[in-house]
Image (cartoon, rainbow, N blue to C red):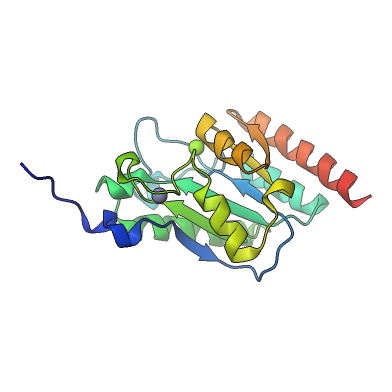
Length: 194
Ligand SMILES: [Mg+2]
Ligand SMILES: [Zn+2]
């Protein structure tokens, strides 16, 4: 029996989806995982429609406080294998991202870029975290120095992707930890700018 591959996982698309809203070059950035950091994770599942999307408590406010203190470009890097598994249409992932981006923009939290790996683990792409392909794509697209950049995620694979390219990383599993990690970023940025 042969397995059908969906149109979303053909080899031509073994690259991350991306949206870039900032002009290169950026010196450094803060990479943010999406589910479990900015919005609530859906346990054992995927955000398959905007009505399922829920901000994590305090996340937007914490990001706004960060940007009030230090002008750091924010870059979302998210694994969305629900696309490759045929559970979430790619258009829906893009729509959710766009709604999220516009809401953040209105809240004073502009997003510089967004990268999304739509592949399944078995697709063999280079962008699915823990591989650092999305971070490297951001370096190529925007010129960020990864070793001067930061990454905040809620899973080991996020942190692993950041560590392997030299980012300072934080594992956050509660909204409080997100706000603490962002405070650390502010301290580091201030030290760097002194
Ligand atoms: Mg996550
Ligand atoms: Zn991928």
